[in-house]
Length: 78
Image (tube, rainbow, N blue to C red; front, side, top):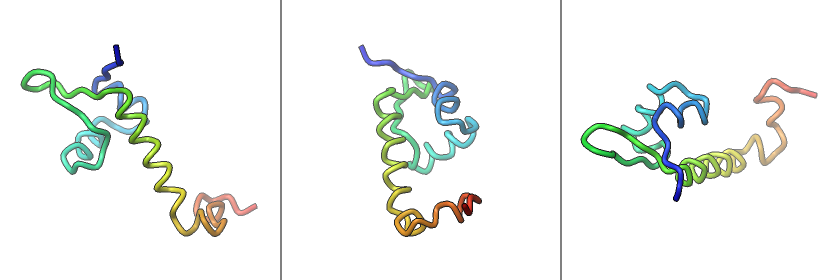
């Protein structure tokens, strides 16, 4: 059976405050979630991992990454 995660577990996993995760859910930009019962928000681990992969793939398409300027953006100039 696939692992089901709570809001707190996902927030800890991706290292963001739970409020940020709630905001992303409201905007439809965070990992796919579902309600278990009337109030409890849950996440399938598979969906969270796919969302993380998509975020990383999107980062790699940004111009400063493509042209090798990521060090400048991240504060590493060497």
